[in-house]
Image 1: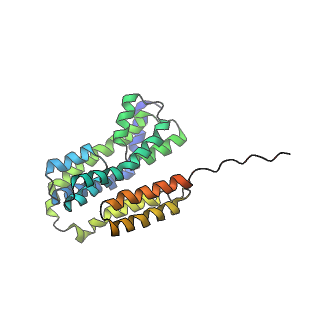
Image 2: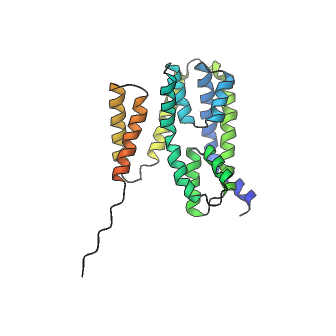
Image 3: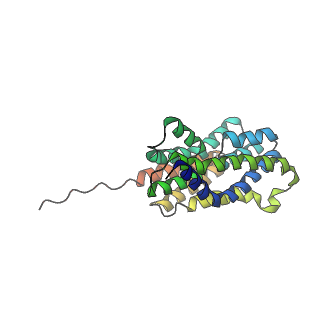
Length: 234
């Protein structure tokens, strides 16, 4: 398939997720200006970070006047999954040049990771397909963040519309998407229990980081395949 066809194939596969991204981006823009950020700061956040979940966590902690170091650690903890994403997708990027690979990791997000994994299972993952999927998401995210930031002040009470639940719903949808994986329930329960205990004893944002660490540690401990037993002598 030609590069142009690959690019448009990626864009076509991206269409179903675009509507959700536009709404999510507008919500972030509106929430940003309502939490004290300027229009420029809000848009710059989307352009430079491009990670909706951690951007909302940043806004939440910023609104609580949390210290800068705790905000940075929380954002790092939330975005640590992107390290795992890149390690997984990197195995299929044999057709990417070094500069294309570095650029690809910048645009890597949850929907693009899923699309890249599915594509790689069917055929070779090409840069044209990858960027055909990722670039529209990136520019839509920035554009609708700006739109939300422009009109965000018109929404005086986001909680009245249930907007405060969107981040929780987003994370829950991500979580349920992995429910068919081995040891999923054990890792989720361990992470959830640890997060609640830390939140009650130490407080925010440590519950995010330590809860995730407990879940990852347990998954690494029990997720290794059993060593093959030597066949008995005949």
